[in-house]
Amino acid sequence: MIGRKGFLFADTEAGAEATAVWYSLSQSAIMNGLVPEKYIEYVLTRLKNEGIREEVLEDLLPYSRTLPGHLYKK
Image (tube, rainbow, N blue to C red; front, top):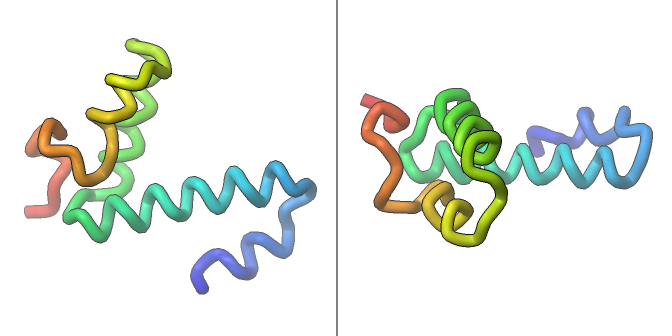
């Protein structure tokens, strides 16, 4: 498991949960052919600019067909 050692140093349960969410998001991006760094940067930028609304979140899922082409591995 990639995160096992990282979870050993989580100071709080909330910190460990946040780490697990990011691992899951990055692994989902990889499984869907995305470059994780570019994808996460795109997600954070969109959330900052448009807020956390359901329709925005739907468009940001790693398997969404509305993601721009530059986020995918070549």
